[in-house]
Image (cartoon, helix red, strand yellow):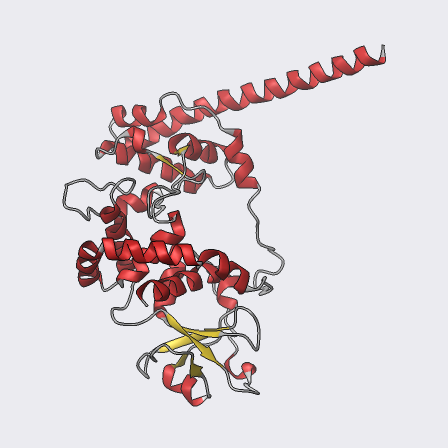
Length: 344
């Protein structure tokens, strides 16, 4: 009798779960029709909207992945505690990624030189972003983007973001991007640069002159799009991202402490010092670890990602542009160091 009771409980539980899934799906389909109407009101052709939305079903796996992402501590948004940078650097700027980056750098020099001339963004920075985002186009994600983004919009935690991206995908199809091309990461990033759809619409560029902007299959389009992103974000021509430095014994860190709280990515910026000119940093006794110094009047902040006594870095305004792409000190430092290794 106990076994029968247990079996009945399992069936009942499955029935509740099934009913919940059915309710989610019904609500999801109703939501898609609402979004369709809003997209058409914004100028998307009905046929393009229907191509994107046809056959979509709710994807619980995407919701689970989104909810499993690490979050910040709202009670202490400026907590600067962080694991050491060195293990991350070893994983992301390893011999294989450097070697492959140099190969891509040489293979794409024709396109890269033209893009750098137009934008001022160094060839090696474009290649390093490509390497970090998708391992030079090898890992771009295979999720169906309309299904993923529609699910995240319906789930509601970040509806304003993802509903806008869903409508942006309809605009992409309206402009001629094949519906079948819309694949990428579970969170909506796509192609070699891992752009969101709205970023694709604003910043993706045709780098090979074939009249299409294909960041999935064209390396030249990927690099031109990355270069345009950095140009539009304010990259300063001729200025490095930063350089590794050594601090003198007894260096007074309190004299350069950052006492401002950034409204954006507060933990990231809290780990950096106050701004000083290169002239001022040199006067404080900092020594370059081999890279040429920027001009004396260039402003820079300082970070010690592995703590006092380890390598420190001076970071120019161009480092902030890398952070605009992905607001993580470890990411931005690794991009800069990979770029340096690729062109060395």
